[in-house]
Image 1 (cartoon, rainbow, N blue to C red):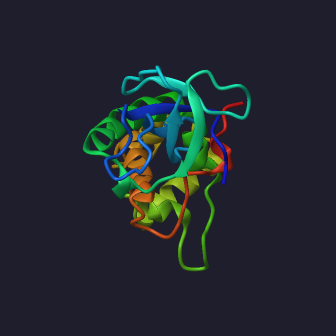
Image 2: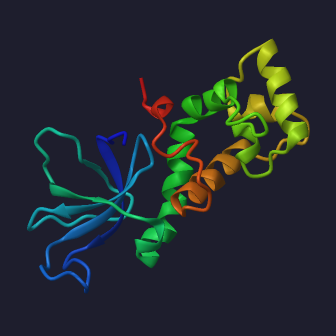
Length: 185
């Protein structure tokens, strides 16, 4: 698993979950680099707001006591699920360069399936047009991609939808969540 250094708070539970034996402050977060869903235990006296950026890396952590571990989408609170969409919108914009590069480097998964076909709204026609266009010149932005591939659905929304599908466990293939190409350089 690729490890995130920073995370965005989706929800803060000052008394932990009702099901926890030990009531300690807890946050449900989304890793900034690899889109991992995590639960982290927060130090006493610290209060966090949704969409706040916190350090969860290996060095001295200011607000986080320890990382409890990865969680599944269905373990998120209602607020965390609502906040997730907004946070993904911001992170996908921030990581546009790396995510556009996915369209430039994506390859086949098997002899019958290409990784681009797994993206929502991308069929055989879009797949071949993307491959044809990226041979001429790599895509530089979501806008460039949309301009050069006729009838292309909004690439940013396609990526966000795919990330949500992966987080929800709707597909066995992981194209984006945890992918090494996402790390900012």
